[in-house]
Length: 91
Image (cartoon, rainbow, N blue to C red; front, side, top):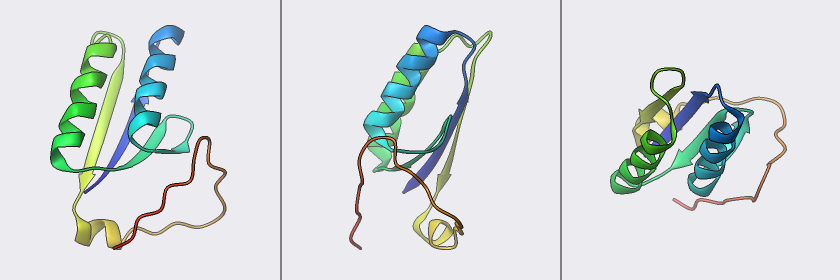
């Protein structure tokens, strides 16, 4: 499954921890948006880690989970510079 994870974190230390956690699970496509190709159990791992890092009174995270059919209809345009590593998926 493809999960699109976005966040708005108010504290710089928490922001860095959330970004690092997301980088461990997916590919940064915008400053605070990640595409994560995960199994359902890996998604739950990511979500639990993020919940432990944020302050729910001042921060927000959101994850849109897309099934295979929906993710196939995703459109992109333009270039993207990867912030970390290139990941290839073979289907």
